[in-house]
Amino acid sequence: MIDCGRRLFALGLLALLQACMVVPRTTQVFDPECRVVANHMVLQEIQLGAIHQCANQGCIALIVAAGIVTTASIVVSGTIVVAGNIAYWFEKQAQCRKDVP
Image (tube, rainbow, N blue to C red):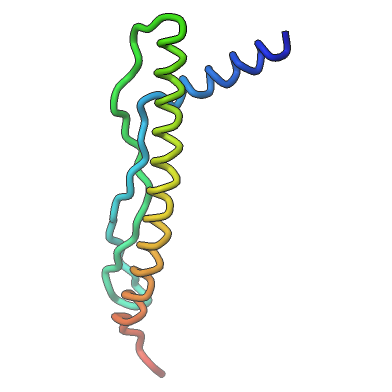
């Protein structure tokens, strides 16, 4: 009985993630201290589609596959965002125009 409850919880959790992906997006912000426009990367969630009609094992397979795709996109995109923000930080430091007293 407990095993069934865990399965239902896992399927419900995966259903919330269905057909979503996370992609990196570059934004620009003005840094008043350095007086430059700096790039900054963020994660953006997009929905590819929804699972409307499925039955039995086919439904479970679709939900599990969607969960795997979502998890993979979070890992890959998160890595890209971290690396990109490090590169943008170095770029901002090189362009920074602070007044030296």
